[in-house]
Length: 80
Image (cartoon, rainbow, N blue to C red; front, side, top):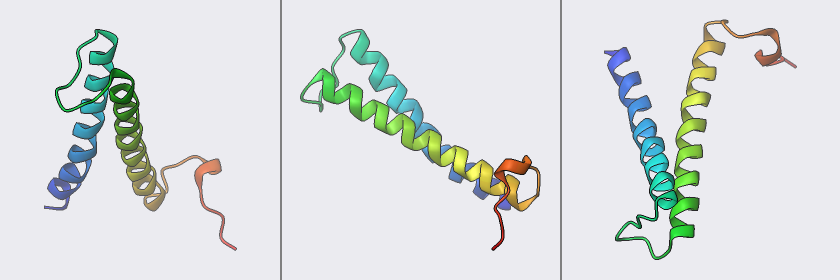
């Protein structure tokens, strides 16, 4: 059950990142989304969505690997 929940948690930001890539790709081909006022805004919104999804997935994986002690020495949190 925990693996299914983890998959769902990773699936939502993955879909957001994929839609961000689609928005950026459409801007390069000159295809404007109907709800978007300009192509430049479409590109920057797509870039923001892609970076947000990618950073969430990366942070989730780093957190999980830190808990299991499967990270390199430089990624281990220092205890004070």
